[in-house]
Image 1 (cartoon, rainbow, N blue to C red):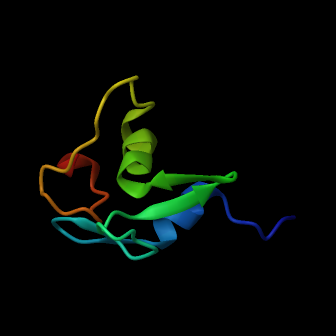
Image 2: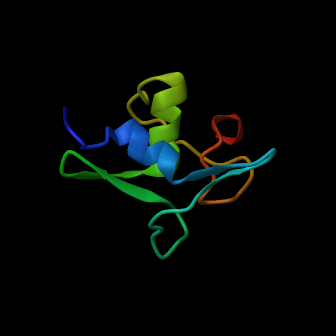
Length: 78
C-alpha cells in the first residue's frame, strides 16, 4: 500500500471550508492565487476546483471568481 496521497487528497488537505469562501491555505503566487503541482505540472487551485466539481474546462473558457478572492476554491464562487 502506498503512503502517497492523490492530488484530490492533497487538494482537500489545503482547503479551509467556511460558509462563504473556501480558502486555499497552501502555496499562493504573488497575486494570491493558490497553486498545486500535479504530475509535474502546476495548476491554479480555483481551476482544479472547477474540474473536480464541474468537469473539464472547455477550451478558451476563463474561470473567474465572483467573490474577487483569488485564494477561493468554492465552486459556487467560480
